[in-house]
Image (cartoon, rainbow, N blue to C red; front, side, top):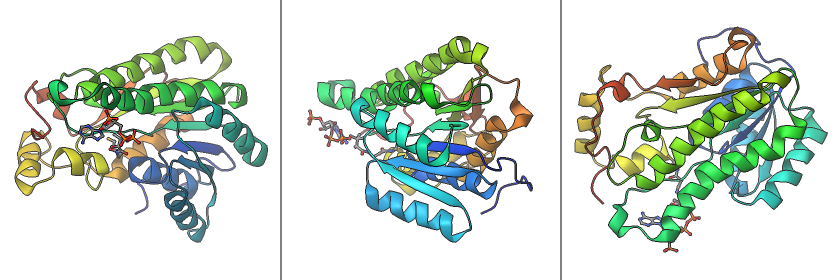
Length: 266
Ligand code: COA
């Protein structure tokens, strides 16, 4: 579905999106392509990336793929170099690759905790670190996808809380360190978003979905399009003085969510 902006805001720009083969990352990549950006989709599964890249091309956009695991720095670095060689300096970098499963701390293995820290937090570091040399300076915009778990403790989400708190502060630190070179770095914090793997895992039943909807001030789930429009704004010239910010796009959920469980007890 097209977004609310009606111009080619990103003509000729190069966007790299990790987690771009599905979910929120995919919709952001599609939005960037609609606005004239060349898009590199990064993800673990080549088939998913191929399908997402083909969808962009069939709508008249320009896309390429890089299949890798963001946990593997040795794979990330050459893939970003190749993306730069083919599509030019990086104007937009979205770190959307993430993992999640509901589990109590006492029922989570050390490897399970580490898997989410490594994908969400270390993966964001790896992507930004490897991209640094290839970012357009001045002008590049980094967007990290966070979660309200970054600032609100939520039962069965200890790994995500720890990882996303790190993502927020890593991103805001990048805003300080890389700001003098004209690189902006911001976070987007989605709320309960329809048609995403995360919410399928966290609220798997109609009852749990209804419970979440009732607790959101706007009384509904958000959409991937609403997040894509926010990402488009943040990497456009309209946001040229915005850096180090954490933007909530959650229908007000974080205002009222308590430390009670969001996720079903697994
Ligand atoms: N409950 C408890 N532990 C779990 C689990 C669950 N539902 N799912 C995975 N784990 C543990 C595994 O048991 C393993 O630990 P172990 O070696 O001690 O058994 C560890 O996590 C790593 O799991 P693995 O199967 O090797 O997967 P992975 O490292 O490739 O990826 C995830 C792990 C979490 C990313 C995977 O579940 C996934 O791909 N999720 C889909 C992406 C997603 O959730 N996106 C939405 C983000 S909001």
